[in-house]
Length: 450
Image (cartoon, rainbow, N blue to C red; front, top):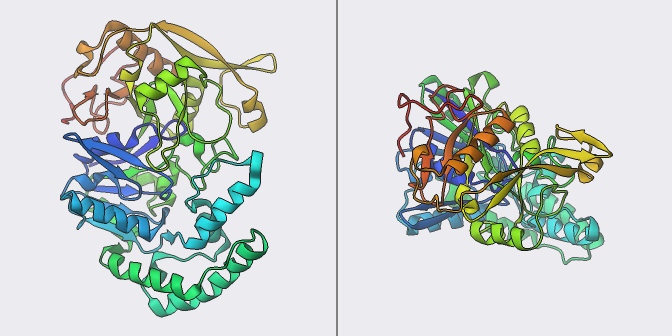
């Protein structure tokens, strides 16, 4: 039995959907613990593409129970759209469960999000405009609508009449937008409630019962460590806690019940939206990584900014999340390069900085210090074991593991499930007998089947 958290070790978009999908084969329960429809996971199975926003990636396994936890914020319209899409693709959604205490994104959240971002002008954060921040703000302000409210139509009507009136004052007076029709909003969301009702449960109790029965549970985060509200590159962050600690808060599970934390990082670095990015590449090289990596957001289609691998933020992710091992994705994107740079430290204010600075202004001034390693100039897309990799590619992975001071358990070489090297079972294997400073690799003892 193992309860495992999977997190993004960069700015999100690291390929967590594929890794969660792979690990879900060994999981009995997959739980999404934070974020909303501002996140997206793309999973490719037998050349069929699944784009998920709220539903955990484990839904593609018919016997896996999938739970949307209380730390998420749910847009019912989008969620129902995902359910419909999966059913059209003959994917069963009978095992999807929704926390009754998760908060609900409303039409006024989206309008306020978009209007607020527009008003920020040059100070914009780069939100998706999907209403996530305002939903979490209402949660903190204690004026939010929860899933349990949707299930009681009389209570929902009373709450929404007051709330819509309150939000209309903001929309009209602050943003000069037309008011919402409270009756129309109520009618729309009562209809959503009828569709979602069979899936709604006390998720914390459900997860606790699964733990007592010694079932394997996978906790799935959205976004990445550097977008964490408390520990990311504030203010250019999301409105929740994607770090491993967020799994406990967002599901109602105690920290002593978590056995292992797995981080996912690209073989290079990307970020979407605004904010400092020390290793960002401009010009030909940045475009090459973007094109080869198909770096466009699952949710918004926005083009991602691309740069070299940043081991400083990598070490920070290891520290903040307590990572036991790493999954490195998109190694194949680097196949054509003669040389590859790796950021090992920063130069800032005339000093060398090896640790991620919590001071956001200082971070914005950081300049990368690079270690240059040779590329391999050949395709890795068909490699299925470490022995298949060109030696420079293997050496590159070893350098990343040494710089981040954590072993590598999985190497992804494309979007499909089979384009994967399992160095060691990341759940049950030994924590240090992987690609690491001593150069050892996995034994056959704990191989994970894909």
